[in-house]
Image (cartoon, rainbow, N blue to C red; front, side):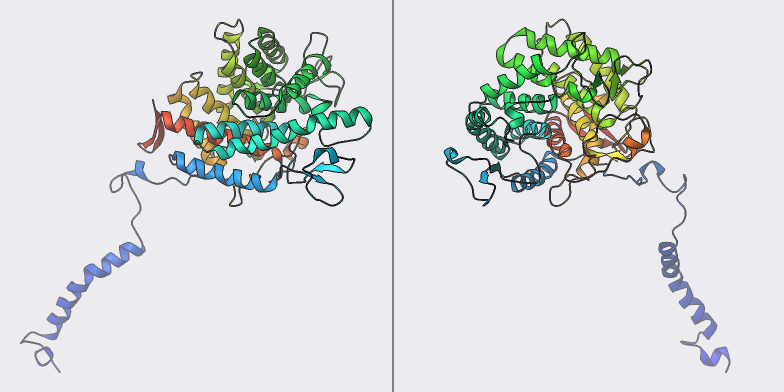
Length: 462
């Protein structure tokens, strides 16, 4: 059979086939391009718009999105920190406090109600109530502090009659360390100043007396401990003392509290702040010529948080204000120099092979955001790093409202393995208050500044 015979409409078959192929070729070519797209080049693609492979969201969060994260945490804590006194044998709630006996206890939950970590959490809840307008955060604090205030006289009487009995408020009534006193005291003063009902003043005065007169000190008056070595200064103790003193100054108007808080910071900084790094040592042992050079992240968090909180209430004309403000700015510079590309900070700030840690990252988020909001730091220069940090922190709040990736309680070490391998846990109480504080202050930042991604980079506008 020849072409003429096979043709259609008088056309040879070969011509029909060629025409058909011309019709389907574009579709085949398109399919080929879709299956094997050409490499992006400077000639065919605006390369600056390629989407990076960010390890955490690189987006401008909204206040509503931040609030949703905080709500997850609040609901989780409501369910896991009950505010009830119970009979330790039967588990039944005690409402008549005259029925307290040696078995009475605060109802067990996942966290302790009167620990220093929970002092931070109460401070965070009060701030979140202001930032979100949701009274549930304030109510969380009010219920627990009222319970403590109502129980305190009963347990004070029991301690007088039974001095060896270990009641649930022993650390409140008879503090044995700054960990027992400072953070809870600061939170109680904030609650009182915010109008939370309850007679907290006797407890506040008791805490302050411990800080001022009972905690061990070096000869020059610097707050110290006798562990793990004699005459040891722990950076953590700045937060366990100074914010309470600063708040007491705000509550009473007495300058002596501001003066003592500023003096402690100055004397800690003289020993422990390394200007070349912009970071604080975790610990310092008086009498040693060589000190352990470990820049633990959460301890640096306690320090920067302390600086922000004292500046927050310190009178503008105070003699140490300029020094404290410059120290804050130098410390923030040192911290931001070591923020990772994921937004987190490392467990040991200057060792990038140590793990990324949540609680310190949340504390830095709060402290730097608050410093911006209070006018201590430039918002344009520092705002994007804060948002990056918050986006990182938000990935560690799971669907239950638990905060993951937080280092457990940590003493002072003299070798890197101690810090590198501290466990992390969603039940480490240290993560919750910082996350709430961070979210609350980021909400304030978002309400007063415009945030957007401009030419692919996060920008904050006044």
